[in-house]
Image (cartoon, rainbow, N blue to C red; front, side, top):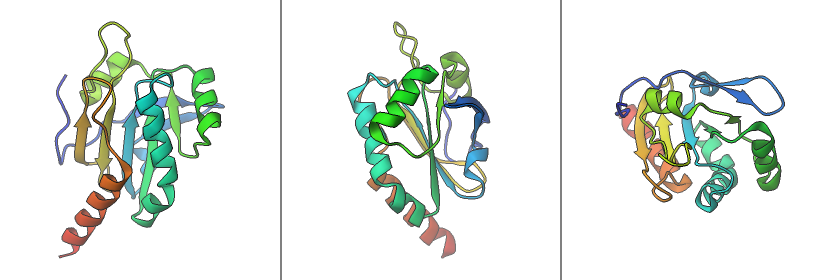
Length: 160
């Protein structure tokens, strides 16, 4: 399972979306910057905190032309409950195949629980990786302030 590095194209991931339809990353981001959050599951307090933090930062992300999507191995009912509990407005894919996502992105899979460990990516317009943050456990993940700052820095230096 190779890790994704800066400038690598992000692989196409298609996941079920709550309420029907599908979520395809990175197509979901069009020509915007993209943020992909792979979270362990609705049971994880660190994941809940991260998802809530990104929801609170949704306007700041929009200011830097960034769109957000998340995914986990949770089933549809669990994901629907999580979205309602935290009033999440960004797309969240459910029922991800941990092995397939791991093979495509390098995300670590918990050997006993079978869930994906927290992994985050910031993508440039067009879907290439700017940064990937891999965790092998509960902590170590993207935070909104860092993402907004990185995108601002990237945009300013691309223009220079």
